[in-house]
Length: 215
Ligand code: VGL
Ligand code: ZN
Image 1 (cartoon, rainbow, N blue to C red):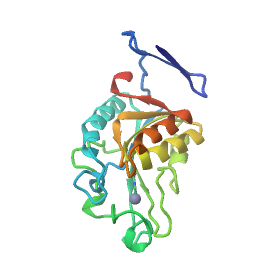
Image 2 (image 1 turned 135 degrees about the vertical axis):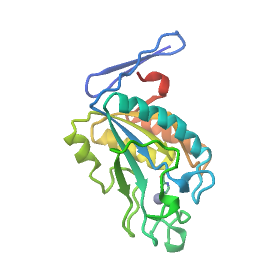
Image 3 (image 1 turned 60 degrees about the vertical axis):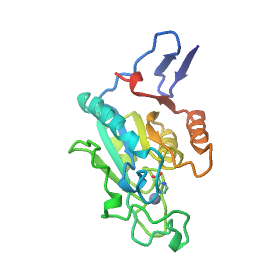
C-alpha cells in the first residue's frame, strides 16, 4: 500500500507502508515543534487526568532532541487559567478545576526536557473565555510567520481537545501540519473520541507521523 499526501505548498509526502521502504521527513530550521499542554494536571494522577498522559513525555523528549539538532523552533503551550475560570464546574463549566496559573498542577511535567529558548504560549488566561487551541487568543501565528516557519509538528495533551484544536487552527492558517501520533494521548470523555479527533485532523489535511518518519 502506498499513500501520497500533497501539501498546499506542493511538497509531496510519500509514505510507503508494509513495503520496507518509507520516505523520511527531514526536519529543518523553518519547522516548529508545538508541544501542547504537557502539564501535571493532565497526568494520570492530576486533576483532569488523561489516561497514559505521562507516556508522551519520553517520546516528546526525542522529538525535542531532533528539533534542537536541526535548529528548528520549539513552542510549548500551557493551559493557564485564573482561579475562577468559566470552564470549571463550580463556575458553570464542564471540567474539574485544573491548570490554575502558577500552581503545581499548571507546571510542565518535570521530566519534559524543554530547551531554555522554548517559546511558551499561555492560553485560556481570562475568566470568561476557554481556549483549546494554542492559536486562540495568543500571538502564535505572528511568531511563526515572523520566523518564516511553514511546517508545524503538533503533539501532547489532549488529542481530542487541545491537540486537535491546535492542529485544525494550524491548517486554517495554511501551515503544513503534522500530528505526532506517538506523542499524543486523549481524554476520551466518550469512547471513540480520540479516533474521531484523528479522523477529523486527517480529513482537514493533517498528516499523521511517528518518530520513525522523521530524520
Ligand atoms: C484541555 C480540557 C480542558 C486540553 C484543556 O489541554 O486538552 N482539555 N482544558
Ligand atoms: Zn483547560
